[in-house]
Length: 169
Image 1: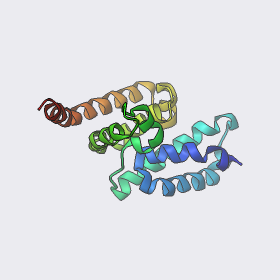
Image 2: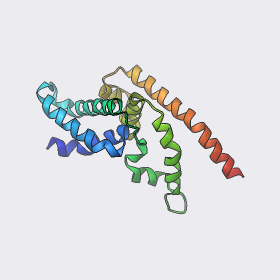
Image 3: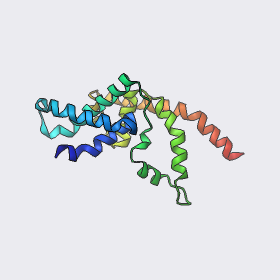
Image 4: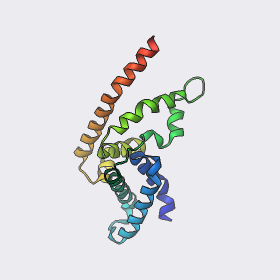
């Protein structure tokens, strides 16, 4: 019952951090680990937060040990993301273009930066909730979020300038 209740959010979080190609494996590892550690859970009301922390840690370990290059956070809920940037013609050209620009920027992030961005922007958690899921202080989560956004801005400066030049020409 708990797996059914939390599988979608756990998969979305894993996909946001490690990419869709490895998200199923990380999700499975998360639930196996949670099952093994279930007797250690003190507050059953905090199960969702506890599970997010396990998933985040499994995802970061996956990236570190396997040295995988994750896909962009945009992979999570791609239909929702595409719908939100749909162009006036009613198609998804804008979504494809946005993903093409954003994906290299996400690749440049550290696993910790990617995790806080995924928790805050993909899952919609507050900074405090993201910090709790990561097992860090709120100030640390804010710092990682700020550094991640700054790194993305730096990565995006060149491609956006190139696109603007192309559009103007």
